[in-house]
Each structure stands twice: as C-alpha cells, then as structure tokens.
Length: 474
Ligand SMILES: Nc1ncnc2c1ncn2[C@@H]1O[C@H](COP(=O)(O)OP(=O)(O)OP(=O)(O)O)[C@@H](O)[C@H]1O
Ligand SMILES: [Mg+2]
Image 1 (cartoon, rainbow, N blue to C red):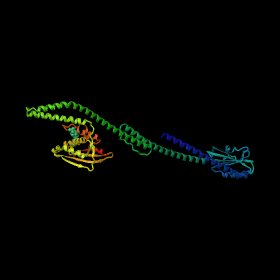
Image 2 (image 1 turned 90 degrees about the vertical axis):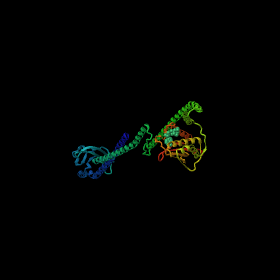
Image 3 (image 1 turned 45 degrees about the vertical axis):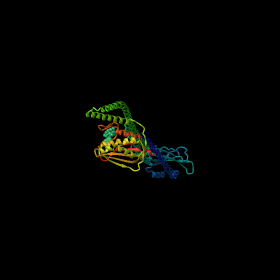
Image 4 (image 1 turned 30 degrees about the horizontal axis):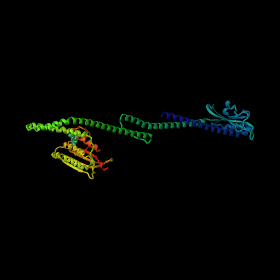
C-alpha cells in the first residue's frame, strides 16, 4: 500500500508538472504570436502616418486600440527615441523610455519578454513585444513599435488549467488508492485466511477447510492447501488405524504367549487330575454324595479344558484349508449343530436366501465355527420362544462381489458404545463367558479377507453382518 501510494503520488505529480509546463508554453507561444500579429498590424496601419510624421493621427489611432488586453503602444524612431505612445504610460518612463531593437536590425526579427510590473494600480504580468518598422520595399529601418499585452487572461487560463489538473490528479489519486486498497484487501484477506488455516492445522485441526473464492493464484493456493489438509487427515486416520492394529497385534501376541504357557502348565496336571478322579470313581465303595462331588469336579475340569481349548484355538494361526462351498450349506451345518439347543429353548428360526448366490472358496470348518459362535450368542441373548433370523444375499461393492450373511435376534441387544468392544478378546458380559467367541469369529473372517460388524436393527435385539468375498469366482 505504501509503495503504491508513493508511486501514485510520484506519477500524478510528474504528469501534472509536465502537462502544466506544456500548457504554459503553448499559451505563452499563442499570446506571443497574437502579440506579434497585433504589433505588425499596428505598424502596417500607421506606416503612412509614420512616413509623413502624422503624429496626431497615430496618437488617435493607437488610443482607439487600447483596451484591457492591449495595455500600451510605443513607436520609436530609428534612433530608438520614443515618438508616440499611449496616454496611459505618459508617466511611465520605465516603459516607454527604451527600445529593445536598437542599431541594425534585420527584417523579420522581433523582441518579446514577459515581466511582472505595476500597471493600473496592480501587479500584472505583461508581455512586451517589439518589432522593427521598415520603409516600404527597402531594408532601411524607420523605427520600431512596442506593444504591451496583458497576460492576466493567460494567467487566469493557466490557473484554471492547473485547478482542473489538480482535480483530475486528486481524482486519479483517490481512485488509484481505492483500487490499491481493494487489491491489497483482495490479496491479503485470503492470505490471512490461509495463515489462520495453517495455525489451525498446526494445532491438529485437519478438518479445517478454506473457502475457495477465486480462480487466481490465491484460489489455487487455497485449493492446494485444502488438498494438503485432506491428505494430512487421511494420513492421520491411517496412522491411527495402524496404531490400533499394532496394539491389537501386540495384544494377540501376549495372549498367544500366555495361552502357550497356560496350555503347557495346566494341561498335563489337569489330565492327571482327570484320570485320578476317574480311577477313584471306579471304586464301588463310594457312596452317592461322594460320587456327586467327584462328578462336579469332573464338570469343572471339562470347563477348564474348554477354556484352554478355546484359548489355543484363538491364538493358533494356521493355514486355511480352503475348498469350494455353498455358504448356505455351511450355514445349514452350523444350524444342525445348534439344533438341540434351539429346540430346547423353543427358538424360532427364520431363513431368507437370496437368489443366484455363487459358491465360495473358504475353510468350511472355520466358517462353521464363526456362524456357531454368532448363533450361540444369539441363542444366549434371546429368552424362551425367541426368534433368530438368517439371511443370505449377494452384494456388489466397488471392489469385489461379496456374500452377505445377516444373523439377527430379538434378544437383549448390545449398547451402541460396545459395538466395537465386543470383538476384543476377553470382552464379555456373561458370568461364565470367556469373551473369545466374537474375537475368534473376526480373526477367521479377516483371514478370509471378510468382515463382521454389528448393524442397526429395527426393534429390539442385535443384528450381525458378515461379509465373505467370493474369491472362488475370480
Ligand atoms: N446376540 C447378542 N446379543 C446380545 N449381546 C451379545 C450378542 N452377541 C454378543 N454379545 C455380547 O458380546 C459379548 C462378547 O461375545 P463373545 O461371543 O465374544 O463372548 P462371550 O459370549 O461372552 O463368551 P464366549 O467366549 O464363551 O463366547 C458378550 O458377552 C455379549 O455381551
Ligand atoms: Mg459367545
């Protein structure tokens, strides 16, 4: 702004200065030419009277010419002595006394000079113009004529021009300043916004976006800036995701180590306890109460064995034994395994199958385990006479075709805040639960590049959505 202001001031002042100088020169030249013409005219008109020394005629003639522009006229003879002059300068010897064209003067030469003098009681700018007068048809000089032209008109004219120029300059300056201010604002406002944006980004607010208001370089900068914050946001999400995965992997590794130790430390003594209980039970002398206590101990041992088995099952990372299956078949087998339990609780099973479901290449045993774990949870969640519905359909998202299995129940439901936690190992809300069922299901599905999640469901209960890619097709 400061530089533009200075530049504008400099430009306006120089332009005004040049214009005024030219204007003054032009007006002066014009006045001079006019003066020369008047002087020549004066000489021509009075030449006859000059030759005959008709001084009175000349006097009369020149008096009649005097007005507020032509201030005085003086005729000099060849010796530069004033011969006739107008009355107005009768007492102004300083004006009429001296000729400026003395001695030998060539035809066509002239004298002109502007000066400020007191005339008619005021200081006036006057242009003195003097030209020589020659005898007709000869080079012999008769004398000269001097006239005094008032330059006050010219002064007024110049003043007017100067005023107009100043006004134009001022208008130009104001317009220029307004333009510069607007321009400066247009540039500085988005830059300010960009600066604010960088501060917010630096504070970690990657969702912050800058409004793109123009198509120029600033707009381009804002666009790049937004792209950068998007990229940063994406990177952060990926990092958080990777971090989560890392924590998860570490957790799994610890569980793996723990379960290996448990398996090693518990399994052998447990087998021996189990065998010994069996041996004791063979003793016919045992009474009913003793047998009952031993049977309870055996049940406890079975539970411990199941725990160890689940734990090892969860931590073991083994190759998938893939084969071509129709998902419906695996689902039916899982249902068969749960049949007795469902029957006992009078649970109603609803099945809905989509059409044209392709076969998939999966590990049948593991997938059965997944369906069983989810259905067992549904069975545990519903009350007597509850309902479990199963649906199969084909989904085609932008990456690949997938089979979607929905297992829903009308049981107690899961609070939304726990929708992710339930897949964490050892997360359980059941008194005798281990919390490995869903963790295991997710692990198996991830091995198949599939997924499992809880989805919103109308009415009470829970709905799980399982996606299995149709890899067998490709
Ligand atoms: N259909 C469901 N309805 C209500 N809650 C459920 C359902 N399925 C899972 N949950 C919740 O998710 C938790 C975790 O389930 P998960 O199967 O992993 O472990 P668990 O059933 O508690 O124990 P287990 O290892 O014996 O299966 C459950 O404790 C339960 O709170
Ligand atoms: Mg379970």
